Image (cartoon, rainbow, N blue to C red; front, side, top):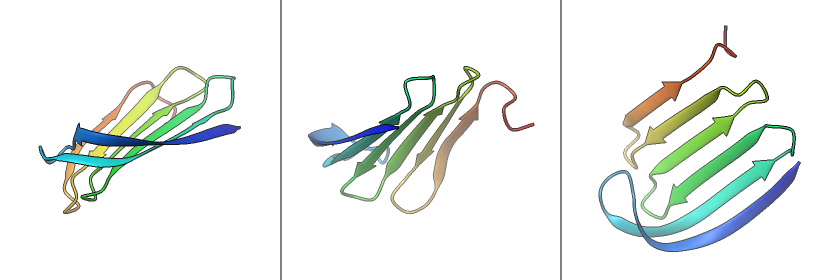
Length: 77
């Protein structure tokens, strides 16, 4: 699995505020991709793409409120 970490500046966080943060991305070159965005305010967005083509996207505001938790496919069944 190959992982990268990059820093970004002034991107709009899920809470609506501009903030800097970091992006962590792991990829196994076979279809599994884990992509995390973490803002300095504490907001977070996680995207998981699985080998079977299904995806999960979760967005959490800095106060812990889940704004979105979307699933596609039936990899969790």
